[in-house]
Length: 510
Image 1 (cartoon, one colour):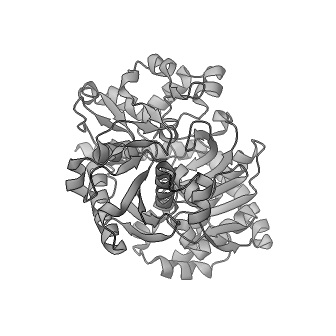
Image 2 (cartoon, helix red, strand yellow; image 1 turned 30 degrees about the vertical axis):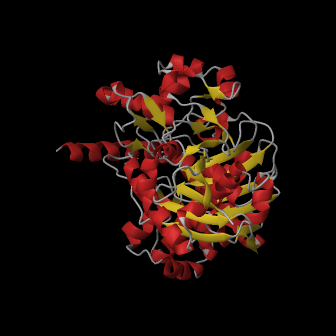
Image 3 (spheres, helix red, strand yellow; image 1 turned 90 degrees about the horizontal axis):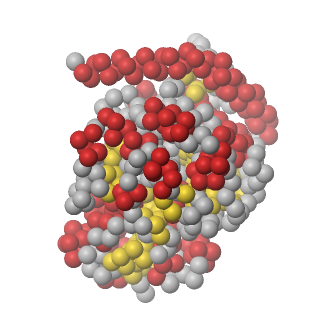
């Protein structure tokens, strides 16, 4: 029996999963991890070479732990973080580190883009998405304005999955799920928007051809065989954006299904049959695993990364099980403590790069456990905003599937169910994106006749978390306060955020 390999290039680590053609998971491995650099306030960068090293590490680990030879791998699929800019020169060499999806330096470029593309026809039919920092195009425009020598050497633009796929196969291309999340995509033609790129004077030649996720991109090269241990000639499918692969990996592929994901960032993702334009509401409409499949998404920049910051920098304790135990004894609302989780600006619903985090309601009752729970609740309040805005499209999800690292916390799962006021389904596996990549590989090589068959074979569920409706009622009161704090304190919040960043930049220069 042959096997399928999935790779997931995340913001904090690379994961590899091997499944067989019956959908059974053989092994899932994780790299030692990588961290993004933050040279100035609001910046976030990673070296794509670190992703490649992580791939080499996890591929070797997965083959060993699975007791599988490279020759038994029939196909490989990819999942990766979205939006992040990977610029290369004419020889496909990196010209700078990658500017990540959670980077907020391109606020001025995003503002200029909004003014340039404000025509309703362009926004509603071509862009179909809000314009914000962290997307590929604003980041590229920042490079042009601030690093002109670097920009002059750029000849090719990739997304993270594209870069790893290129290192594996030597082939240059992307898929619709990643391309549609760059702000350079045209939904009317399912290709790159020459109109937008001409308006911002960026060559369309910078961007690769676009394919569906399950199409074969190429095969493992001899060079990649030496570097990874994979067999030369093994086919590699395009795969795509981690949000799409996550949805596949938890069986959410039909309209009426939805995921609530607490990863490094957070997303509420609804599967839809037809594209919807809601750029002014701050929600996204992106392509799924092919050009005629779509999903609606409310995305928050700050999620698990915010909780990780709180644990590491404030609590100085990364023992999540111990923190879970402490938090479980704290009542909903934390005795009047509310946390706004905007450590790196925010996307949905605020589309504001110039805001930062807030603890509101500190008192002598406040302790580490209450603060930790307030961080958890604040992150979910942001997600609840996304869910409610997505539902204004007229689509109410029949199923909510909790995924991401946050689904590993029973307390956090219950907080989610209580705030949403509806049940949560939990998958048996906590690694959905990498399983989605493996399923996509199976569809691409014919091991599965369809994504539906691949999901049926591979995806299993272990639990349903029912909401406590009394807690939901209390949370609705805190949710209103959560939003009131933002709207009433916004001018001061923006002022202190910008002032702090300027102070950081001054220190960096001295």
